[in-house]
Image 1: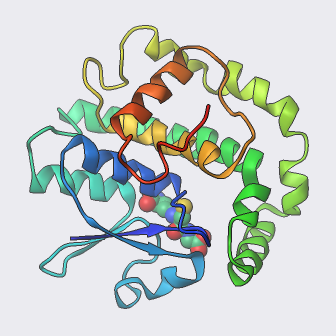
Image 2 (image 1 turned 30 degrees about the vertical axis):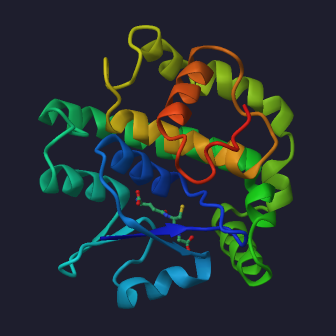
Length: 227
Ligand SMILES: N[C@@H](CCC(=O)N[C@@H](CS)C(=O)NCC(=O)O)C(=O)O
């Protein structure tokens, strides 16, 4: 099977949603052939079926778009080392997904949005700037401005629920990592992949993030992460 993933001009893979699936595959000891695509190539994935990344294309031609749908499908295909151990776990992961998307990944994006832009090829820079400035109603420079001040609040307020959970268990999945860990890891990892701006203070979240990096040390880009 093939995993279409977002790549920067130099090949670095940085999408939070794609990293969720990269980690999910690693937890399940499954593999997919990576197909790196840049922003402007996304509309052509699988003849236009894959409208966003990650997109998973199975060997029989089935195409699955959306990271959560892909995670559910991976468990159907291979129930060993489940990403979701129960229907309650699936439901709780939806809560974490909503929070991860709207608060965590969004705040990381706002702190590194110029770094995201810089990492693209010229034509993808133009697309990224135009689409994001239209979506957010502000220049990229203005979105990122003041990140030094926001970094502290991000750690003490936004990430407080994560630090709370990690005070009670080694992983968000409890004794073993599960899809909850993938959701949060993906939402954070694009910071250190694309930017020198430090997004994590010392503490339980940073320790857990380092444990996730340890699990994924063979994935391209992870060994280079400096926290
Ligand atoms: N809900 C989707 C969101 C995926 C998503 O938004 N991916 C971004 C890349 S990080 C994308 O494909 N963007 C297309 C674009 O900006 O043109 C998921 O979880 O897979």
